[in-house]
Image (cartoon, rainbow, N blue to C red; front, side):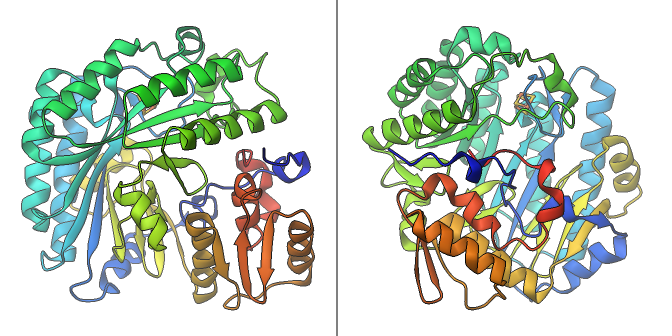
Length: 439
Ligand code: SF4
């Protein structure tokens, strides 16, 4: 259905969960981090993200900053440090700001003891006065106990994202994530029975040995469980930068055309099943808040992907978490040992970051609009002659329409959204090899 133009997809492009992307960050000190808090408008709404970098079992394909939850002393020390950081950041922010959203991610937040989770949640709610925030969490269904589902319901968690990836047993073995369909079904039923009303499934295409038939079978099983949202990601095989992926036999990885066809198959099957496409790789039911935000043109993109959250700042807590302030991005220490040392000394735990210049913010807005709404007014940014020539080429290929300064991605252009957005990324060209294929 979509035209396949391989040369437009071969060029690696970022996923643009921020602009500039994390690849551009440089070393920063805590003063840089503090200035981010100082510049926040009084009373501006914020969102919070807490990172739990542990999982009970590590999946071979995973590119997240996470490690095995097999040492109780390490977990306890990390959680203690997180409590200290909550105090440090809350003192900086004050509790006069509405917190619209509180997300726990990782890793797998359910790799820690449920009692430790409740203590963390209580501490954050009190320290930031976040009692009205919407709560969401990423979960590993393999280790989701009935104790966990009950407590998430009681805590008022409204949205949970489950790592599903594939229902195919052979593919699961090949990517180091054995997960029978019954464990997903148990997790879904347990969460819904306890009032966690909104669920997302993460699925993947482009896995080694995966065929369109296997993907179709997984999509059918997923749709039968009626998650509110489905994120369908292309697997990025980058063993040079993600060492755990070296365990994966990549000898029969789907080629570019097969990946492209799988992305198209996912789009056709999910839209036929009643899901609305939101952004370039997410699907949601028609009445889901993300669909409504997408249709209203208010959907945003941040480090957690597509969101209907419109807060001015997203404050990250925990190792490797990224805070997004209006004029700067700051990432905490990635190494959990160094993070613990800093946070435990009542210090901000920043390691890297970047100032977002006014030009960056304008370019970031164009990129975000293209990815979230499929259209953007480019009159706010300087467009080089080379970019104009590329835009002309995309127009002739029928992938965009250009009306004056308005760029609109066409239905045929949807799989090229990231490539089209990247035309406005002034940092990209020297660094292409760091990113994944656009489909
Ligand atoms: S459970 Fe999720 S975060 Fe943990 S290793 Fe697997 S994919 Fe990565």
